[in-house]
Length: 104
Image 1 (cartoon, one colour):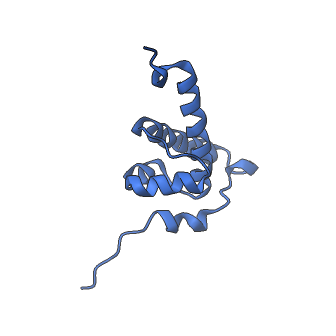
Image 2: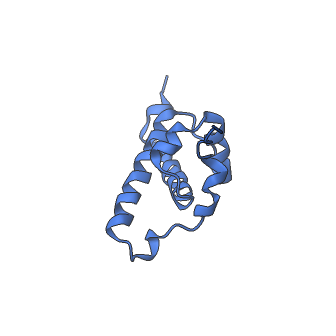
Image 3: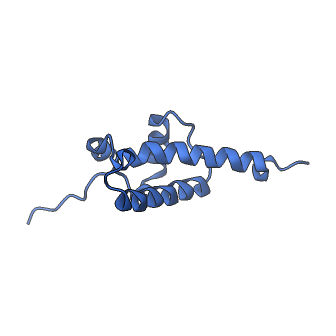
C-alpha cells in the first residue's frame, strides 16, 4: 500500500501550507515561540482565519515557526524594504494575550 503522507507531493503540499500560514501570521506580529506556545484550538482558529485548512501535524506548525524566524531575521536586515513592514500588528492581541499581572 502506498504511503501518501510521506510522498513528495504531500511534502510539497505541507510546505505550501506552511508558507501561507507564515505569511498571514507574520503580518500579525506573532513570533514562532508565541505560535508554538498557543493551544492547538487557537492555532486551528488562526489557520482558518488565514483561509487555510489547519495542519494536522505538529511538523507543519514547527515549519511555520521556522519560517517566521527567518522572516524576522530578514526584516531586521532589510528594515527599509516594503516587505519588511507588518500590516496587522494591532490584531496580535486577538491571538496572543499578554500575561495578566495580579493585584497586590
